[in-house]
Image 1 (cartoon, helix red, strand yellow):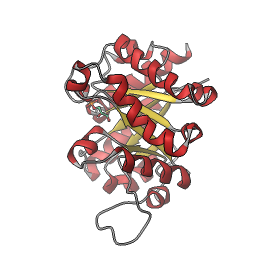
Image 2 (cartoon, rainbow, N blue to C red; image 1 turned 45 degrees about the vertical axis):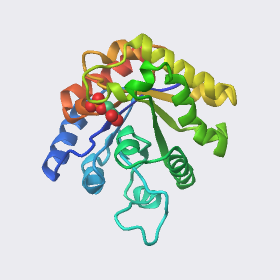
Image 3 (cartoon, rainbow, N blue to C red; image 1 turned 180 degrees about the vertical axis):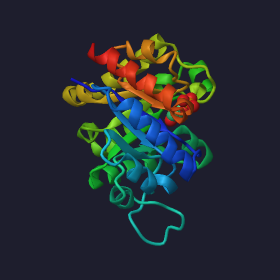
Length: 255
Ligand code: 13P
């Protein structure tokens, strides 16, 4: 039985004050909700502060990126072992903003996936098509290519305990979420694609939806059988909206 995972991607937002205040509010609101894993990924600068603020809570710590190297002369980078050292567990890789603004390739993202697995961290692999690819009917082709970068180098077993976040690029930060039916169709395709290699791995795989998820549309997205929670951007910066999304996931999948 898969547990949903609702994870907040704070992106380039936050401060010491905001990190402490938002976590204090989230701890309060989320502590009594069961049946849904919860994680937050603040900017790497605030991970240690966040870890302290989260102490003893059920909210896991995550990060938004990792380097393809473990140590050495790579100015400005952060390694998987460093993230592990400060207590991060869920690491977002391949976010479309990094693919676009930092020209990250499928191959480099697959390398990050492998390093995270070796370090004992949980990769949250973001995939998804642009608006132009969607209109050209290439959604499945793009998602398959992005997954295959890992499947073909590391095998289906690499997805054991990992997370995929389907985030159609046209839905990110636009207020225009995919409809539940649209998202479900792609999630099912993703699960089937992995099931062709290993049915058991596909069955346990958490596949999150991301792209303009908010407290209003979350419940109907989570009602879909292959949508196992969400990767939330804007709404994760507001304690009440984020908690409502966590509640919706717990309710949809457990009761
Ligand atoms: P929004 O929820 O702001 O659309 O962002 C989604 C996202 O990119 C999460 O990683």
